[in-house]
Amino acid sequence: MNSVLPFAQQMLTTHGEFFPFGGAMRPDGQLVSIAGYDGNERPKSVDVIAQMKGGMIAAARNGEYKATAIVYDVRIKLPSTGEISDAIAVSLNHRDNYSVIVLIPYKIDAEKLIPGATLAQKGEADIFPAQ
Image 1 (cartoon, one colour):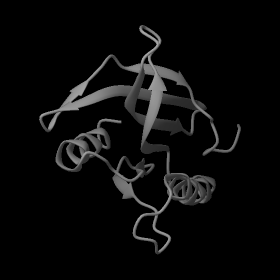
Image 2 (spheres, helix red, strand yellow; image 1 turned 30 degrees about the vertical axis):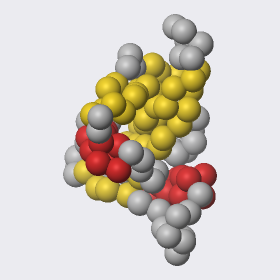
Image 3 (cartoon, helix red, strand yellow; image 1 turned 60 degrees about the vertical axis):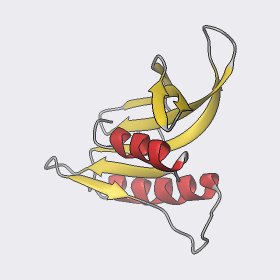
Image 4 (cartoon, helix red, strand yellow; image 1 turned 45 degrees about the vertical axis):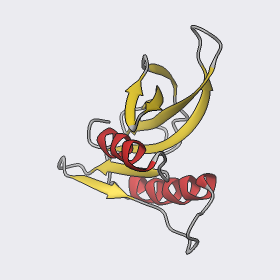
């Protein structure tokens, strides 16, 4: 998560938005960046996520990755107040049956990113084959 989160924060601060993107860790610990592109200048986020996820699943089955992260922008209901907030979502999966989605609510004020309290929920566990 530490390798992908700074880029999302930078994009939000600079542009106020970002397209979904990802990263993965190879078995030797090397980090790689992952993006999806379907030829459209402004593709739908769900399409980009699906494209990246498909590539990650194939690579995981081939033993190319031991961990993956997909980062995307969402709107969530804050459990503390019930308010709707923008949030950075980081879907993390590990080959050792670990899957979580980390949510970081945020506001942008005067081009400054103001993060809220981090939340987590069970992930989809859909990148690595069940062991």
